[in-house]
Image 1: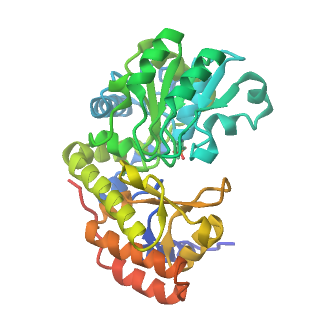
Image 2: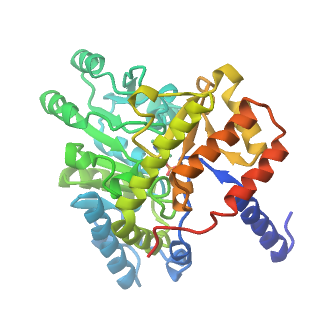
Length: 408
Ligand SMILES: *Cc1c(COP(=O)(O)O)cnc(C)c1O
């Protein structure tokens, strides 16, 4: 148990030193700039700016003059970046933003489709249905994928015609390609389906204009995280151009899910939005170049990379099938011993690694470093080299990339 502040500071410092040595390829993390970090510690973190509906004018506490102004200005900034007229910044993460979307827009008993966990979905509704109440009120089925990890439109359309879902949630946690939103829009119009997009992973790529903006292609509502490919503070958002959806989802956020919305996120989020307005395109382009280069390099050193024949990836991550070398979970832990951090498939098929390029791109790595990284993977997984030896070389690599690019 802690007894003084020194002990706490020491542990946080140890964490910082440890993570500075690690090669972080976790696709759901990122490295935020000093400016974003410094903007997390204002007096906003001690204040209540809550409102029980979608309407920020309905704040319940006094003393919110500048908090209100700040939130409205930040909403405008986020709305501009994502091409959305209405924005809600209260969700404290992508998951709760998704829950608000589902609960706000579905009536009890209606059917929703999402990406299954085994296809690298986040499992938003799957997890909600662990709660007995939601198991009884939300029906769920899964979006079919083909072997290249693209949505299988033929099969999906047949399912839609037969089952009549009320909502389809696209966007996953291991996505390699953009989904066919425009095609689905036509079907959704015909069948009366709400198209929701979970942008948690690709928010930064959308902000940079290097991944198709789902709202522009016809999604009714987009929600997500602000800390994965988007290098902001941890948090969530909901964005839409449909006032009725904004109202229903916002009323759900305010009434059922969030009262204190962690206002200290807002200045940091506003800073990161400006960073992305200025540097988003170059940042996003380099991320995708790095993903493709890493996919190619991983293949060259002897790994089976998913989607190889389609160019490995159009996003901030690649998927590598390591089943010929053992369990994904065990391999990701072995890599961790060598201070290489990436994700296994969280207990699903236990065969793939998800390797992300957003943070290393933020830190300044380019195609050349992707070749080095692929060799480090091969030494741990294929050559079974001593992980401590590899860790020393990982440190030699990461020490050259301790900065933060694409800042103001
Ligand atoms: C990470 C993730 C979430 C959850 O977001 P949090 O910000 O962790 O709450 C939701 N959906 C998808 C697709 C994700 O990858």
